[in-house]
Image (cartoon, rainbow, N blue to C red; front, side, top):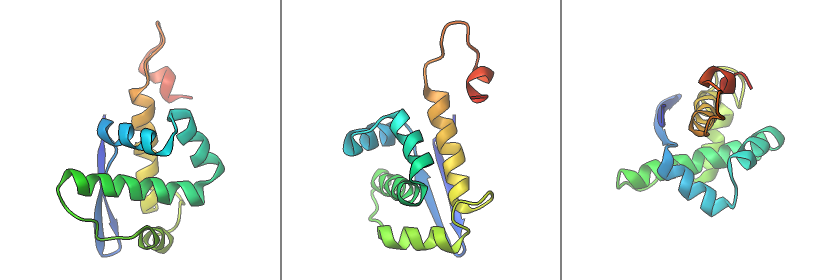
Length: 120
């Protein structure tokens, strides 16, 4: 399972962490769960995805003992400048592995293999 990704927003490279420590912190701070994340990505992508990415970026900075170099507005601007959420955009390169990491972390039902979960 992949729990971080490095993305290049034109000339600004950022690393995002979305492993267990991030999920625990995000779920608690946002009063949400896995279903809430999927629902928000689907129903409010222009609000939720920049917020999610910014929180993931902040968490990575915190893990590395660094301060953030961006504000939430600057994160939104970078997303906008690199194709919003279209296939191949930097934000799509974040969302796809992030959501897959959530799916991979879910418990499997008895008799269910990993391929069955990925098809949903």
